Length: 149
Image (cartoon, rainbow, N blue to C red; front, side, top):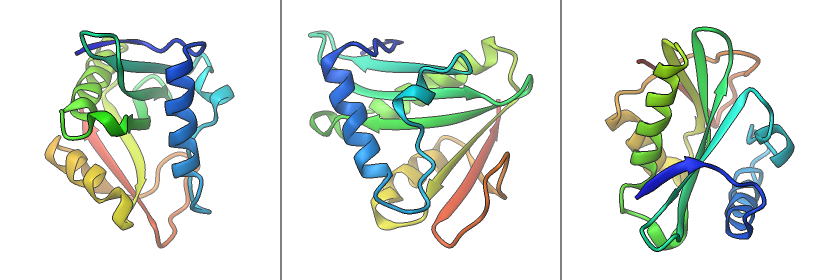
């Protein structure tokens, strides 16, 4: 698996991102970033591809300030589920965050069944539950996690 910066012009990436945004925005409480926001200079978007060049997944790191970053838009392509794609992307983002001098990473996700596997992954990676951060507001369906890196 090779992880590199995302090419927003790649058709397969656009399709995966649109699939993710459709899934993520079906809840009224979703805070998924749209394509324009993902292209911001404060965001670094990455993709994972296999040795054949097939897109396996994507994830983003949003810089919040000099010490803190936020994990955004983690998505594994349906054809590559249970192959460690999201785990690898999370590891890559943590490495990039360290290089950027960040000390903590945060994420917001949901406590609903479609997000159960994601929550378990984050827990297994050492993320712990915390209160809202930044401009987020607690609601019955969202949860917040953090990790010191």
